[in-house]
Image 1 (cartoon, rainbow, N blue to C red):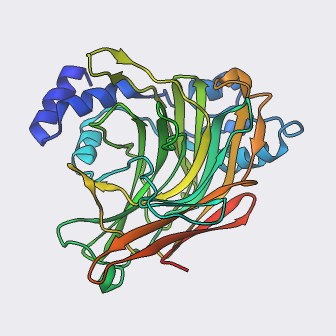
Image 2 (cartoon, rainbow, N blue to C red):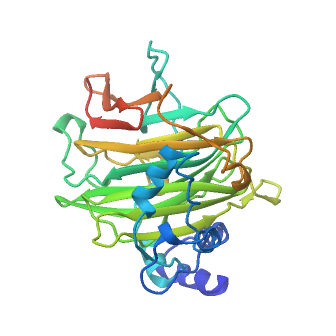
Length: 366
C-alpha cells in the first residue's frame, strides 16, 4: 500500500495521517516462504531472509540454543506483515499507549527494588563496556482479567488494560534513549478478556506515538515467545511466535524509527543497549498522555526464558561472540498507585524473581 493510499485511508477511518506515515517509515515486513518452514534445518541466509534470529551454536552458546529451540526448533508457519486495511482498522481501534517508565516518587530501601507508576517486572543492565543486542522472553497471555476491588476501580469510560512486553533501553536515566519493544495487550471490556499483539519503537523526542498492532492472532491463555535482535545500531528485527497453535505461527518485522526534531530535521536514534526489560505495564489512554488506563486484576503472569545477549557493539556481527546474561543481578520494579479519600499509596503489581530465567508478576501488594 502506497504512502498516499495509507494517508487517505487513515483520514477516512479517523487516524492521524502523521502517525500512520511515521509507522510506515518505522516498520516493514519480510518475505515469507510458502507452506511450512523449519528454521532448525534452514541455512543462515534463509533465516536472515525471513527475519528470524540466527541459530546459536549448541556448544558455544548452549543456553541460548535452548531458548532458540523453544521458538524455532520445529516446523512453523510464517505470517507476512504489511500495512493493509486490516492493520489500519486495528490501529484505529487501539485504546492504549505504551509509554516509558514513569518517574519514581516513593523510595524503597532495598538496593535492587525500584518503583514505578506504570511498570512492574524486571530489568538488567549490560556489563561494563558491553551492550545488549538481543533479548528473549516467553509468557502466557493473561486469560481472565477481573475488575479490581471497588476502591481501585476507575472511571467507567476508560478501558481496563495491561500489557506484557520485552524491550531494550527506555530507562529514564538515559536522556537520549529509545525503546524498541514487542508484546501483547490484554483488555477487559463488558466482562470479556481480549488480547492483541503489538510492537512499538518509542523515541524520547517523539511525542505523537502509537503502538502498531501487527495482526498476528493471539488469544487470552496463549503462550507466546518474543525476541528482539539489533542488526545494526539503528535497526531492530522484532519477532513473535504464537506457540499455542498445533503448528507455531510467527511474524517478523524490521524497524528503524525516524525522529523529527523541533527544527524539522529527521534523525534515526542509535540503540544504546544499556538495559533489557521484561515488563507488565499499565499503559496510558489514547489522547490523554497523563491519564492511565484502568488497571485490571490480572491475577499473575510469568516471564520465562529471560535471556539477553550482550556484545562489544550493538550489531549482528557481535552476536556470534556475545555472552548470554540472565536475571542474575536483576532489578525488580514494583508498581504503585496513589489514591484519595482516604489519601494513601498502595502497591498494585509486585514482581518476584523465581530463578535466573523467570520472574513472576502478581496483581496487588504484599
